[in-house]
Length: 268
Image 1 (cartoon, rainbow, N blue to C red):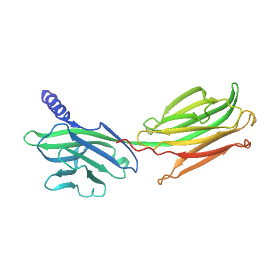
Image 2: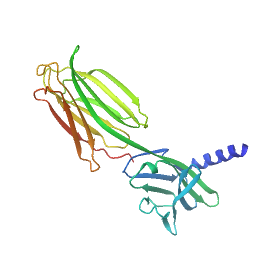
Image 3: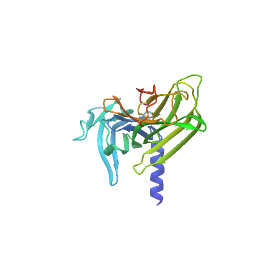
């Protein structure tokens, strides 16, 4: 037991010399970059990247000054190196899948101290939505706007009014944990507007691009008390925004749906 504690403290001390991200998030199909950098100059002979498995570690790639980088057989199209040096090195995983999720080790084999080791874990993120539902409220009078998104980790859901003199009221939020590890987050608010007003819902999760759905809601003086419609969006792999809207038999006059997608650069 004493030996295990000593070994743990020893490795923790050495890992403090390596700068890395504890968790890296990536969406399925995207590219993930795992990086390790020494905070002090060392005489490094080789850098090795390993995947941590239940029964041990699997060597994925190595880098030496003499031979450059070498990727294990069968992984040449899957993995690559960036920022190659013996003090800092990044491994790129292309077209991330569920099988790539897990923890990885970077080992700096130094002379004469031996191996300096640190860990970084790759986690998958996903995002479905936004989904908007608009219905009429008689008390208090107005339109109840509900927007939701499902993803992992917990998605951020934001409702906005695109008219500078109007705002939402009676905010309410809820979250539901799903059996597949995702979370559905819902935001509901009341919009009291006499005239047609455009509202938006933006959703995001970690490094995925911000998605925004715009809906033009008829004012209180333009519709009856029975109108109700909801919309949802999805993205194709080539980032074309598709939409479907469902309405009841009564379609409020002037109601229109607009879709927009904003792409933010991924976190470095």
